[in-house]
Length: 188
Image 1 (cartoon, rainbow, N blue to C red):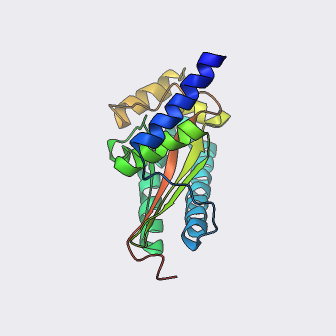
Image 2 (cartoon, rainbow, N blue to C red):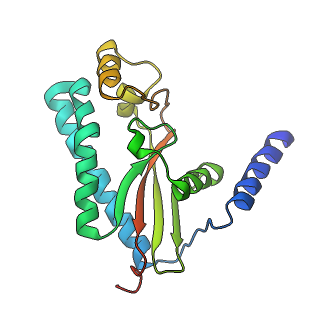
Image 3 (cartoon, rainbow, N blue to C red):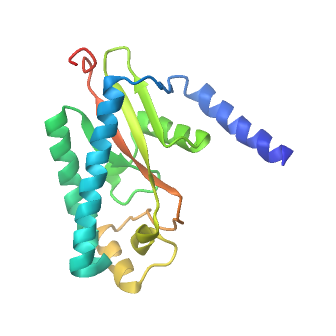
C-alpha cells in the first residue's frame, strides 16, 4: 500500500514537474462553460447517430458513424463555435485523432488526477479543454477485449492500424478536445 501511494504521488509530481503549464481553473470562465456546452453537444449528436445506426444495422454498420459522421460533426461544431473541436486518445483508431502536445499533457493530467475535465486559460485570451470519454457497456462491442469476428473484420478494413480495443467498462477511452483561439476570451 505504501509503495503504491508513493508511486501514485510520484507519478503526479512527475506530471506536474514535466508539464508546468498544466492548470485547472475551477472558476466559471465563459470559455469553460462554452467548452462544456460544445462537448455535450458533440457527445449527444454522436451518441444519437450511433444509437440510430445500431438500431438499423447493428454494431458492424455503426463503425461508419465513428469513421465518417464523427469528423463531420466535429467540423460542423468547430465552424459554428469558432473553436477547434475534436476527439483524441492515446489508443486512437484514426491517426488524425492522435494527441498533439497540449492534448498529451492534458491526457496525462486526467489520468494522474482522475479528474474528468481539464481546462486552461491561456495568456493570449484563448483556452484549452479536454473532457474524458468513459467506456460504457455498449462501447465494448467495438472497443472491448473480445470482438465479434464481423466487427473485428470491419475494424481491420476501416482502421488498419487500430489501437482502440481492449477497454473495460469505466476506462477512459479518450477525450473530447476543444481549443479556443487567441482573443476568444475578449470576444465574450
